[in-house]
Length: 394
Image (tube, helix red, strand yellow):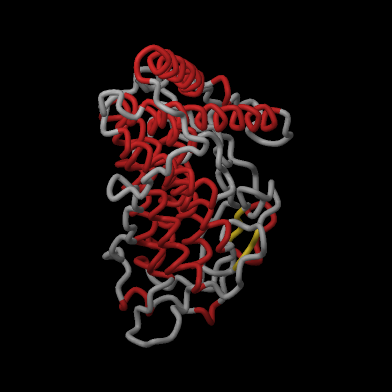
């Protein structure tokens, strides 16, 4: 299975104490604040913990979000905004903007920013698994599901929560609709790569593989990241003509494989251009991945075999134009897994909510905000991809 190269950094955030002394007017209210602080810190730790898996991540996410919703959902039976929604300032960096943070005094901003990071974690978890040597079928399924879960989170944020923000996201920021769309599409495309690899290894119908490859290439094109996925369609189409049909369409197979050869050459040139581009991910070597190298050899060998057999036995005419491919995949397409927030914590009752008194003022706002609001980059584990074992493509 090919290694995924592009992984944007995790969003960094300023520490949040939730010390609303004076405002939190009861032991139960203080406990909510303390638990918000500890569950938030726990979730942030999980983002860089190599032992964390999807189950642990979900538990940590649910623990924090179930409490945070107590500052978002109306608890007094009215249609007005939760009185605690705008009490705390939150700072978050953006994955494409370096260490310059965005700040909003809004619990919804905290919710979408943290959930965005959770989605990024799922893509990183999938990438780490996909980069393993001798990946198992169960691990491949985890990769596939993790990417669909990430897509579902991004989709939910875009459709449900981001529109609730008082301050719209600036261009280029993570919460801008175009950026969110790119993440959704990329996650779906990468999930479909897993489907394609699985279909190839199980020697599924070549027409199905070609259609999936075409649909996946379209995803990447939409996201502005189309690499070499489109090559798979002509090569598998050439094999469809040449092998399953008893050599009765050898000429069309040759023309399809010639088209695959052109696509491969264009992709190889793009890979070389990518290597010379400055920026994150420049250490990746797409054209040196085992899957890519195997694909080049398969195109060459299959084309030579077709031409050899056609010259000795079949004498079929090679058409001037490549055959039209039936590339509408009817199944196998990756759909985002629906994301839902956890139920509101049992701690967050209307009675406890009533004990928060905003007229008292939060003393910590005047105490030591400068030290607490410093934003430091997330120190992520330095993981180098293991040997790429590729996938069986013939």
